[in-house]
Image (cartoon, rainbow, N blue to C red; front, side):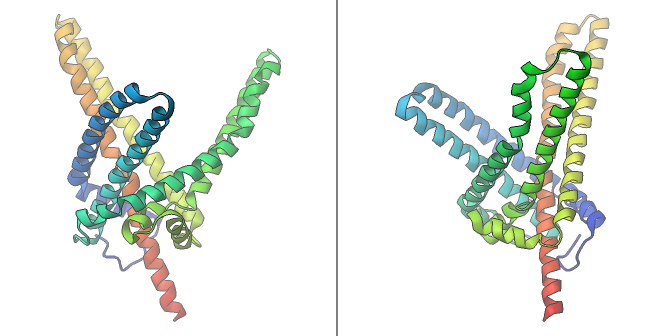
Length: 291
């Protein structure tokens, strides 16, 4: 495993990310299960509170409270995954979990700023697509016109999504900075921007490859378990046990798909943690050369 001394190229970084995932898989999965279990209980409680108080002034307060708790829940999830990734990467418990979780409010602030920037960028990028949607009623009903309209709409949607991805790349390491350096809000964004200086497109490419890999893993895993469920139910129908097997297989299938999704949850945090340390190594080498 990497020991925070050598700058990794793209393939080495992706390979190390897979190694870290294997090494910390059990802890990452347990952390996901625990945080999601607590989040599920919180969701049920908040739903009851929202149903009782969502009116007038109390409704606005409840909505803000629910959003804040959701942000804090997500910060807990991401922070834990990054700390376990750091432990597996450095081969040692560099920091205590309890100490790291003291900085959760800083992480919440960083995530809040990122969310606002993403929302603003998405709103701007969606303007052409929204305009085309409103212009749909003026489109000729011929097949060629409809096809051309759909192509233009998809084009602007893809352009908008690409623009949002590029904007988010400026603070691709901001959450890791907030977790490991206890920076918050714009301080973490500024520090993240300095870390990726000179490697903007490389980091963007790594993120795209990793996210596509996560998507492929999730789709393939859930598809396999879905096909297994279908086959088992079909066999049960043939032998006259369809209803009983359905009651058994349905929960199993849901649990298996949930397990696949839970296994994919830590993957973005793993790559961000390794990119953060890798960029720090590069900056240190450059500083040594300058000195």
